[in-house]
Image (tube, rainbow, N blue to C red; front, side, top):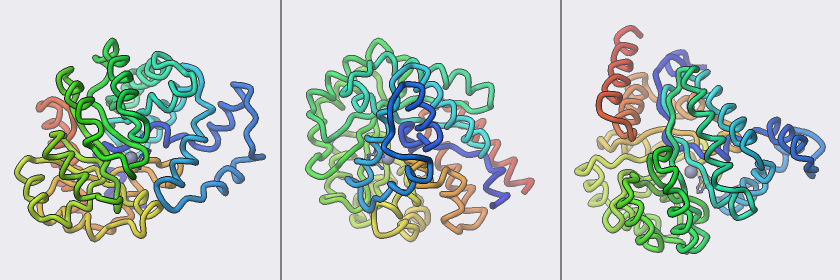
Length: 329
Ligand code: ADE
Ligand code: ZN
């Protein structure tokens, strides 16, 4: 384990809370809710994690989260992640949740968000600050996303922004233009997945940045194929939340060379874990996978705190912690 990375104050900006559901907790929740899993033990669950692209991953991901039923289930899920984050000196996390993956199977929005919110408050005692980002599932109709947006409004104070995830094929950012416009009017900050090596990846990044006007992009390394668009990210200070180990599972590589280029160009690229229970690596392991210098790793974390959705004084406080750590290291 890299000691430098372990001690570095870190931010996690691309983390699906449902993707942190480890097999052990899956069994516990299944037992609690009287559900029978089609696996005899934890090893069998892990052995069934056979995916090599986004759709095959998503199938396992949605199947796995069916054990989440009650408010305490969502609390325990988030608390387990936040304990892990604290153990890796993640000081701040912006956490995605997929309400439609639960409301579509009869679990209420209220149950989901109350459980997550209670964990976020309790985790402050562990030294981890966190906020929630509500994602829409892009392979469902835009009308369902809009209905979910409206359902979220009574809980607006608990949600910092909105995202877009799930299967990108045939589901471009433009499909959600009206939903994003309303989300902006309601005061939400905006991000969306532009997954790696999708059909029309570059066009999707262009739509997200130019037509939707997102504040940042999740994944987005394919922007390198369009230098003018890279220039636009630079001009507007739009960051990318990259996830190397995840890339290694759902594309042909971890895309480390692309991340290196983006960093060298001055794009605010950051390193994150995506769905760590499935991709077998949290932030520490993702940073280690890069084999970058300590100076580059510190820059990646500076980028991360810089593009967080925190007020300026808190960003500055975390950036000062990084400076102090680097000066001593
Ligand atoms: N949902 C959870 N993880 C995802 C990913 N990496 N891409 C798209 N949707 C997701
Ligand atoms: Zn993701």
